[in-house]
Length: 429
Image 1 (spheres, rainbow, N blue to C red):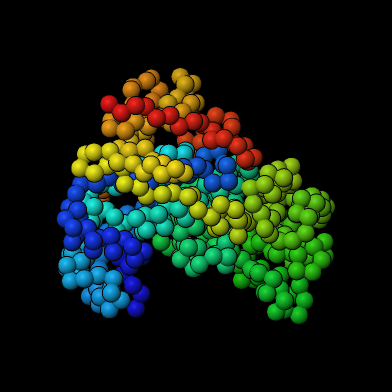
Image 2: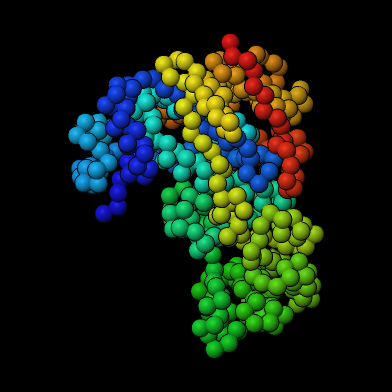
């Protein structure tokens, strides 16, 4: 039997709870914030994703008797802690950036308010979801930009954990990918799915033409034939002979993809298959996609790089206590510091609509300026979900497309550099 959501946590969450229940601090009103000190990979922006998944998991964050028996037997909890967890339901507030919003260093992507006891136990769950999904969505958004309007298909399920694959497909779709190969993601989130055949289907036949005929008979002329099992030119010839000039698409998964695309386009056109599309796959990332901008390509299949964040598999978020009973608190170590107090965030824009800075103020809203846009929305109030679309996958997809258009041109750069806009802290009231 799989453990409940309450066990998707680190032991120290529950040992802190145990100590706080004993020493009387468990009931203190606290504010935790989720933010990143920097953008991984020196990227120019990050993308908020995973909020909808997180809210589902927070609703399911409970402990049944099997969970409690395990925790007792392992010596993690005592009777008082066990009694607290038996009745646990998050009853506080969650405020955050909506899905599809972008973030920068310091942005309070999520604010968690409640008693110390009910808020501290959510740390690992919150960071697990947001660190993964935001990393995937950020990489995917960069790939969508690099693809310059050509559809990208997420097909990385075989390169990650089976549950991470579903979450990654969701994050990639939010970031602008057109479809996924993952059927669980398609069912769970309404994402378009696609897929035809791998090299194994060709190899199980006595020859390539027989494989193509079999696929065409089953899936129709609109299918995509994989033509690089043997010789690509011979594969294209056999594909058009089997399907005729109305063949939907060919896919190439190896070789110098830019050269192969150009040669394949010329060959297809010479055979009269002028409407047959070319799909490329095989170790593509945002840099490879940018390099293929001039090639005659119709769509891309992206696998490993998108589900692993294209070199930055985590958003590097932290979950920090910033306020206790209305009093700002902050970590002040030599190498890691935080700014105390609950932050309110706005994004400042020129009159033309271009963003200029992320403005954060502890203790209240920043001073008002024309062109400011408030960034935080209510997600949960008194333990009840605020259902107004802020965690919707499809709304988030539209939101991201609009938000990226508001960023300065530096945001579109794939090179390492400073964030597209600076983060400014205003003095608290």
